[in-house]
Length: 351
Image 1 (cartoon, rainbow, N blue to C red):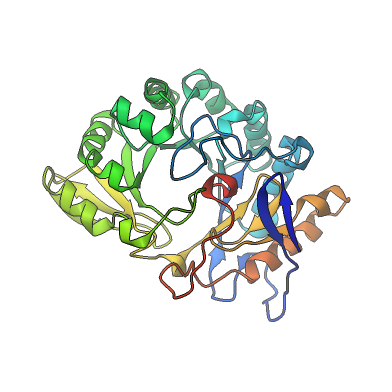
Image 2 (image 1 turned 90 degrees about the vertical axis):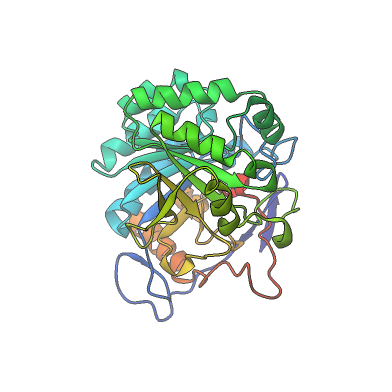
């Protein structure tokens, strides 16, 4: 059944466990095991990046349809203790828009001690909360930053907030939220400043990763012919730096790495389109409304929130989650004939 909640489309689906082995982990039909959980906690954001959100922002999710902090803690507990998840990352929208973020992090840290708790953020306002988040149990952050030129940043994000972002990055470093990674989306508008961004990251001691733009923009203007490829980026960076291929330390890690000028600094490239790594994907995702989304590009979502609120036990929720992941797609299919982008944009799914 297709539903639309305040303009954000979702497809709620049933699950089939036919043929699934009797194991606790989140396995799929292709032998992959999901151990990395991404939890979107809000659709709200303090920026309006052109590749992620419409200028007016995403339609608001009614408060009663958002997972509460306690519900998120419970689902993270289930994911770790019943399903074998080994890393949790909080995303949005922008996670810092949740005033109860520290309580959420502290609850998870108490229930799943020893599990890395990370966050993807635009860092706007992070300078005021980094220390508190670290005390609550957050271990590291990924920061989305596409340009270190203030005017260019304002055009890309539709907000003049670069000083706040830089202050947030430095505050996170002081708070020990490391290793810190900077994520930049590859677009024609960002290619000319890519070398400057890499130089700034090397100076700040943070790791930069460029991400090929995927068809997840809210305005659905992505076109394969206009995208900047990993090969094009390498050529541009090679005009200023000597890059030596370093590969992947973990086969399921999305970024291929290059040593910069012999190291130790590196730059990563997540070539989601031209060098797909779907066959090694180890992610499972919860949307802010409490649905399991097994793949960024699949509009099939399995509703945990309603089942949770109906009084279901932890094993019932775990089994529903297992079914959702058993039916995961083989890959995103961007390069296949007839590919159709998902209805939700990245901001509505959570990275």
